[in-house]
Every structure is written in structure tokens, then in C-alpha cells.
Image: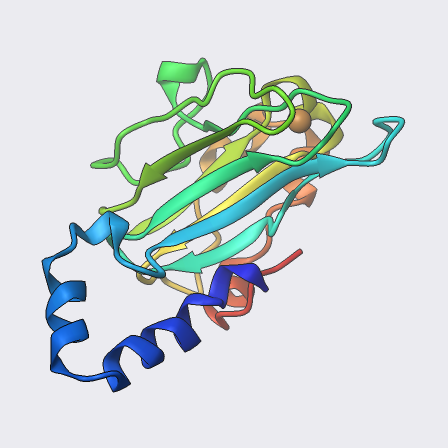
Length: 175
Ligand SMILES: [Cu+2]
């Protein structure tokens, strides 16, 4: 739910008068209140289950996602499905690949998404445990399951953990 705390803040800013509105308008977009959304990397204390939370997320173009390792006892990554990372491409063709590398407990990594479409990503040490996530930037075709031509190259546990496009488009972060 943290992902959407920006809405009340934004309303507050906009209702607080012209001076504040001007201040908000002058901030670089990535620093404006509410343009950063958090995804937790975490798991059970013994590491038997691991996850991105939310694992399904809808954002607007220009928003920044920050992955935070909230797992006291495990390292994780947030890594795009992309040939740069040794995987088939499951992000828009015009988008840039990313790889957080290993995030120690408490560390974070952020990128800003500008190209609309569906982005699938994974955690390098836990892909086979189904630690994957899907972000939709802007919108996508709810009737089409994206990137199915690459499904055969992914572990089944990973495929099982991508929320559907239609589910994400409803707008509520999916745990
Ligand atoms: Cu992990």
C-alpha cells in the first residue's frame, strides 16, 4: 500500500496554495513527492520463501521504482529480463536494461521508467524459487499475455509468479 501514499500528499500540496504548487513544479520530476514507488525484497527468516512485494505494480511514465532489501538475512537483486543480463528480453524493446547487482540488507536501487509497456524482472539467486516481478508503465494490452515466446526459457516457478496484465491494470499493487 505504501506505493500509493503519494496521492494524499499530492492532494495536500495542490490544495495548499499557489506558492507550494510553484515549488512542486520547479522540482525535478524524479524528486517530486510521490514519483518514487517502493518495492520490498524480502523473505522468511530461514530463506525458504522469498519475494518482491508488490510483485505486480502499475506506474505512470516518469515514475521511479526503488527496490529496497528489507530482508535481514539474505541478499537479492532486481534484474531485468534482457540479453544484457543473459536472459531473453521481457521488457519493451526501446527500454533500457537494468541490474541492481547484489543488494545487502538495507540497501536499495532505483531506476526511472519512461517507456510504456510491460517489464518483467527477477532476482538472480532466487529466480528458480519464483522471485520475479512485473511492472506496467502507463498501459498495456490486457488481452495479450506478453513475451510468451520466451516462456520456455524461464523456470516454471518464475512463470507462475507473474501477475497477469489485466490484474495489474486494475491499479492495486499485487503482493
Ligand atoms: Cu532474491
